[in-house]
Image (cartoon, rainbow, N blue to C red):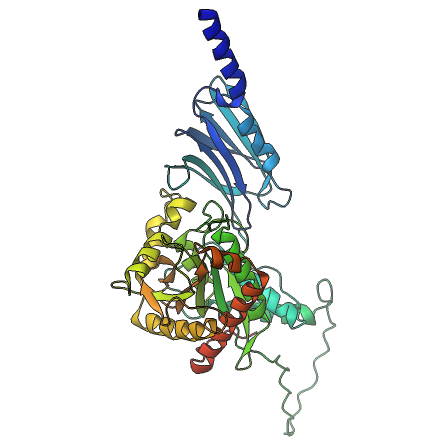
Length: 469
């Protein structure tokens, strides 16, 4: 009898496999999310993991010791998940550093500020251990916008400037930061265009001439020709969710984060080829790939580039599959305009829990303060923008509500930028899920949204700020 029990137990062991009988926490999944902003490594497990980490110098490496684990095949999967185009991670090595301690060594492509933290179970996720790898010298979105515009004009691009804008975000930007940076870049580009390669040669100094005592009429020296300039209009596009946060998932598995990124990229192309009142428009994306951006960071990014408008793009979901139609929302500082709007805002505001933010970050309380400074003027302008967009969307698809709804969405709380949230359709409705997946409907949406933006500016011209290039 005992022999049969032992044989039966052995068979179960063979069926389970070594990675399922490893002592300690069981690894559920490993994921890597590469992006210019930062690269994220996630280890998901069925119980909480305890880890210590340290940075190692040249070449830069992050060593992470995970306690209570034996090396197993799931952890080894991380090695193969590193992409060649990851801007931050060169490779990952994993080994048994000590009994019940697994060491991960992340080889880095550039100096990095790492954040290592844990996340409690939420939604479909179990316990997560997260490494966020932020480059010490992050790309400056202002520089990128200006360089792109100057290439269009056939003007030389000045070398990157050392600027605090790339590293800090003041709570209320004084004046027009983008305008000031553009002016500096143009001046530096002009100097470069006038200068031959290498340092200018020394010119011989002419001998002084005797003083001329006669009074002669002087011909005024011609002013140097100034380049024609336009007021650059910046539209911040915010594709919802991303990375660890898939957003709503349709009955056939369509993920909200994928659909809204596609729509945002199409809208970016249309904005970049549009002019309003003779002024060129330029789109800035809070994310241009599949990575997670915290809610407050989305707001900060828009303010950092001096955006004139903020458009957050989502795909609606509801508990009943028959709900359908597109919607546009503006911020409400009080109650929501409907029970459905309140339910949706509450769900969207949970994105940080699902996507995963480091609540121990030193500046979290400062960043959160940005979400409490919205003004009545901003909300009024947002309602005008939302109405213009809603009219255009109604021409390409069904509307859920024919007026702009209001609720307390965290991403709409930039105090100085008219901001709306567009729900493109109900991804929870099988019919609309299928429509959202089509190139035709995504193109129609992008066309409608850019038309709404143009009509808003036609009635509400952008402020005359020093943003010319």
